[in-house]
Length: 163
Image (tube, rainbow, N blue to C red):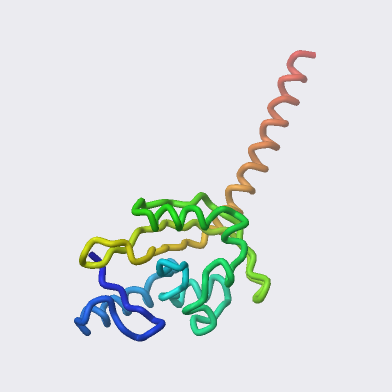
């Protein structure tokens, strides 16, 4: 069981202040974006890394429904991956494009979702770990283009050798 700091109410899932501070430090230090959705898909944690990725401030997002803040979540089917985790199954969403109209930020990301359980084992939310894969995706596209050009050159050489 992972005690998580709830940034919306400045309280923790566990009363142990030491764990709360440690968890908060981990979330704030992570290079990957970390979010937590409650049962109603409202954000209760929104890490600095995800703020940087999307350009939205934590205070503008916490307590709000994810589908209202980022409508693209439903449009690309990411909501289904989050709901799958809400039913108890770890779920990795495929790489997806994102655009945040309010900030103009765009790119590609991937998200791994984990169910969060209370001490009774009931699912109380979902932990989402979001990685910016924009550079990786760009490199893949460049490699695919170079491969396509190489295949054309090979075909040209094969044609020349036949003639």
